[in-house]
Image (tube, rainbow, N blue to C red; front, side, top):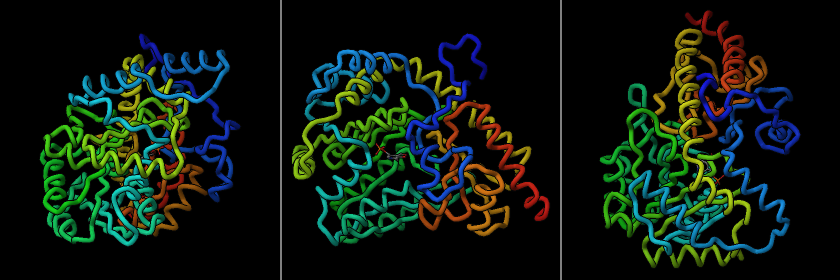
Amino acid sequence: MSSVNKKYDFDTVIDRRGTDCLKYDYAKVFGKPDGLLSLWVADMDFQTAPGITDVIKEAAEHGIFGYTAPGEAYDAAVKNWYQKHFDWDIQDEWIIKTPGVVFALATAVRAFTNPGDRVLIQRPVYYPFSSVVEDNERQVVNSPLKPVGDHYEMDFEDLEEKLADPQVKLMLLCSPHNPVGRVWTKEELCRVEEACLANDVILVSDEIHSDFVWGDRKHHILASLDKQFEENTVICTAPSKTFNLAGLQTSNIFIPNRDLRYRYKKAIERLGLFNPNQLGLAACRAAYETGEDWLSEAKAYIFGNIEFTREYLQKNLPQIKLIEPEGTYLLWLDCRALGLSVKELNEKIIHDGKVWLDAGEMFGPEGEGFQRINVACPRKYLTQALEQMKRALVPVGIKKA
Ligand SMILES: Cc1ncc(COP(=O)(O)O)c(C=O)c1O
């Protein structure tokens, strides 16, 4: 997409180096060489919506950063977003603010299970799904997703059998799914929740990517599908992926059931956390109140990047199969046909290609031979990264052909 007739600029490559951002300034800490093109961690290389920057500037000029709590207008902005985009009516008291969604997942583990209990996840999945369980001395039960054709599916037989284990107390669902890019259908979501209900398993649904859904698919908020589901479900959301605000660490967790909410809030209080971040609250409210047209342009641009990557790979690196991206700005690349070991694949991409992606095995052993690429960046930058990957990998492909 060109920037002609567009209000926002997604084409300019903005230098983020020297801002202490994880994506560029921590290569050494992560054991990577300098000078890589960086398409790993899930934030965007775009400036956020101007309405958000304006309220941050206003707060900075006011210059007082005292304790702050979300007011009625904050809750209204959050509720309106979810009503308008997902047709779900949220009550004020359901909203709990946490400093990030990973914190929210860890809190659910601590609030709803005891050490030694089992928590079900579906690998390959965003790596903190495992660490929040294991770091809290609970056990991971994995029901792996199955690759079927160009996408992944849940293995319901396996899932239902594992949920029936009385020691499984909680399930962490990723919806839409990072990294495999599935936007779960209503039928799939209902089947998961029904299996949880049948086995007294509380369901936590991480819906942080819900604003990025491609084509005519629809994201369903799990709890919105049935009144009974509301009573058993924790919905984790944030404006951070949607508006590129991850550094402000502000997320909104919805818990309709009073008992679950009480236990969850207690788990937060036990950690001594009482007040949210003032700038995060201001940014979140402005995002949901004023960010809509920025988001629709950002989505169109990112979708263009997805189509560009698809075509580029088909033409230049046909051994790499793009798993159909139904949602998120993270693409899951099946590189197994290159015939490289996990180590060789990583080394070729990093050392020969000078591109930093997320290696598939970070998401569980099911991810071996895959790579995750974040395409929320200017097209020019993405093109350069793909060109560098081609230079590093084409000799391999030719040898194998
Ligand atoms: C599924 C999922 N949940 C949570 C997060 C991170 O959330 P936060 O930065 O709010 O902790 C990410 C970031 O990539 C993610 O993909």
